[in-house]
Image 1 (tube, rainbow, N blue to C red):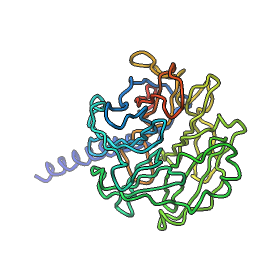
Image 2: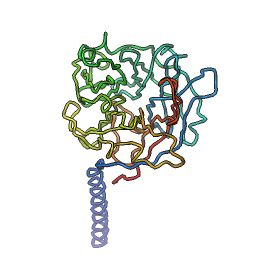
Image 3: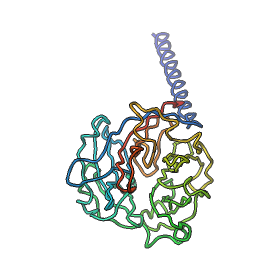
Image 4: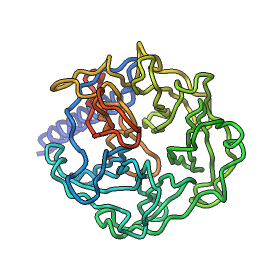
Length: 349
């Protein structure tokens, strides 16, 4: 009996060792997962566009997207020549996105008037959803339930007025496209000026959303079009951060450049940041149908980790973006922007 027990114990210990070894390999492979130095993508056709309804929109722009329990939640700008506001929609499959109900957020406490370029995330310390957007300032609203579009609070501003460093450097540009990300100590708000500058403001994690200040130039380029707007900043979960900024190329089309850093306050090192080797541009994308856009413009990574750390996996990236018919002409705000989805095809994971 004793020898049988010893035999059973030895078998169990061997099994545990095998499982531990496989877990170690799995953990090691996750640790080694990293972003490539060049990217390849496939693109869907247009998935979300203006509805044929009384809002008479010209385009849908600037999407922010998260996936929660199998449901995709999208916040975006509604655009027409007379101005911008916000819309919310949700769906369980991208094939169903075009039929999702539009909830116009000007009908909520967010209210009418200029609101654009939303970013949504769950701020774990407050147990609240935050929607950050531009309204001439950097604004935010909160909601305890992302499924309730009527639950958003009235806008509050991060700043009393435009930070001086921005007013002194933006020239003829515009202060736009606010993006929030937090580490274990601080929360940072990035913004752009359409004039070659990326700004970073900060407050402590405990004081967020109050006390935003200490605004500095985080990155700049002498070519305003090379560092234009629509920044995204993500943690890749391996002690590094990924920065994306929209540029306007030599052909006049929009595309994204990318950088990495070991710190949100550190130096940004070029990753895929040229027209020849971009993060996302028409030359590294294959379209599932005809190439419906040459501009890969303002968007966001599909996030499943929805908290304030903006953590994404470096594997199998998906990016929801705005595109437009290259033959469309006229006022920028009245262009027929629609939303499409990029899926990474060269993931090393």
